Image (cartoon, rainbow, N blue to C red; front, side, top):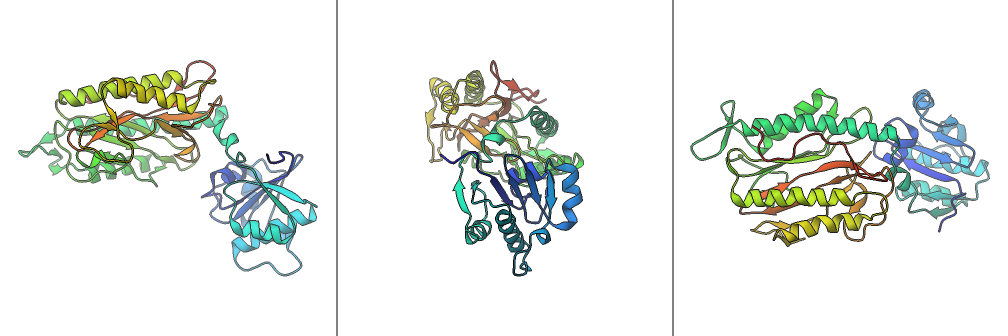
Length: 380
């Protein structure tokens, strides 16, 4: 096990590195670093960013690469210069060894090693602290989920109220209503709310929905379920929403109703297990068992014609839309204040797919739901 008393270093580009952003407090697009000892936290950023970082981070000191110029000049490349400065800072502070996380770019590792500083890899660094959310982080996730649900309701109700062309395809405002058009509407609605869809969205129906991560393509049709999966990021806080609902225009078939009943039951079974003292695996197994008890089969890794179980039950969420740990086989103990999505589903080429996804907080007792939206198929 790594020595937890060793200083810790995070480095990279905060805009792309959530663990570093969580400390720097500013989504910088340029290289930066965070050096944390038992008694001091140092943020190393470009000089033009120092004032913002002083105001928005918890750093005790904010410095720039020029403050730690090595014997030779700093390289003209910003990332290289930042790595050189980090190594020089550690050298001046007489840090013989440091802990690093899974995201440390090799350029930083190389310059630290060249300076004779030993690197100790800590697999939990930048993971455990992000798994256990603060109450403020939970509030930010709840806000993101509320916005996600508002757009979800708008899209599902729009689909449900479409008119129908002679061939059974849906029509909205005189034009064919497609997966692509629905996603564009979602993007516009989120933009109004200062959210972005950098990972896109899913609006999928049969047969493409048999591949559970297919984004969807072409016209939507009456009587056929449409999975709508929205996962936007709040551009200010950088916390994510993630919600899935299924909508059927017109009347669902008996098979689709059976699929939906099973998925809702699986969601409830998993939610019952989502508490301190349980494991991520036990949550997943509860969902799988409910689907198996309803007569559906496993088909992980293989797209099927008939509705089958194709994926795990959910994932952590926070500053990334997918964070450790997975609610799946091998998933370990749950921690208080972890936030997960629970999203069991069934998928097949013939009947389409059904998925219901909620966001929940692990508590000592029952999990806290961050969703308010109904889970049904009828959005009229």
